[in-house]
Length: 469
Image (cartoon, rainbow, N blue to C red; front, side, top):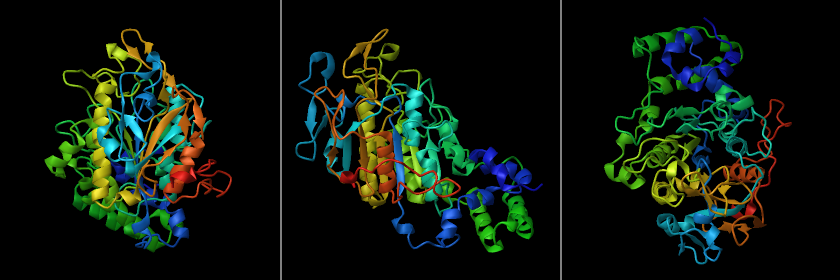
């Protein structure tokens, strides 16, 4: 059966990777690679080793899903009134004059390697909408607006035999945005969707026996059968009318490498890491997903999204992956040591993210890897009482983000909040400006066209924060 390229937009990346679909699709992975190749073709880099590759940048985008409290982490206000300041004191960092909350000692010691924005701001205190805004880098995104990762991988696809875009740990719970927002490529199409790993809370590399199943073949499909199909496809393929035979052959070779080769499989296999490294990241979902993210960018993946679910404290049963939505849910105080409390989550995050930064630095990857740590909004300065415990509610007016690597100015603190970390006092950063800063850091001009006509829709309409670059 033949397959036209328009059919690719209706198929998930996981479906394309399942070899059982090959007979019906005529092996459509070459079409997927071809769909991404327009910009590379115009640059003369299709199917060749691009000398710029060593300078190409990757991104690990960590979502503190639910919204981290800025006043207990990056923007501590020890002199505020008792109803706002919380129990945590500020500690000094490696950068004179820059303080963070006491539950982040490891990140404090690395402050010269990252920048913090204390003036993130928008006006929507609703999880699913705010998450769509963060993903799209827009204050009013359309329902089918492509996410940041999809835009990056359209403009800078990977040349390695690995997926360009991977999502680790699926959103879950009532706070998640609609799935098409992030598991498809939006109106860019499925060719720019991420490969999603971690379809539920138990599907993560912190669990014993975890295994990535995305590259499993269907029953009865052997490497010999795949080779036979490849030989047949070399003789005829409907895509040949749109691509040169030489280019098509290279696309097809990449598809078979992905399906049958070892590079992608090994990149996802955190069991190949020494126990000491796994222990340093932390044997929890966030720590092990960040370790996998490092392995993926090292293998050539361009964009890795990681949902910062910190897992469960000892003795707990699963409730939600919404670690940072700390209203006082389920009887857990925001300042408590349960899965939904800062006493548990911030030390786990501090340990895992600091391990990532150190590991990237030691491996020579930090200069070309942008690390982003941010939630969809912050939390209210005023401490509230939930149904059974104290917490902080949604607060988009002023919150914080951390950026590191890829040329970000280490030790920088941009913007400022008022005395209670409630409103921006100086230099607000909108969703558009934040996205533009990320694009600029990755070497993508924000004004780059992403629409079919090449100019009517830009990657971002924001202005990069030049002081951070």
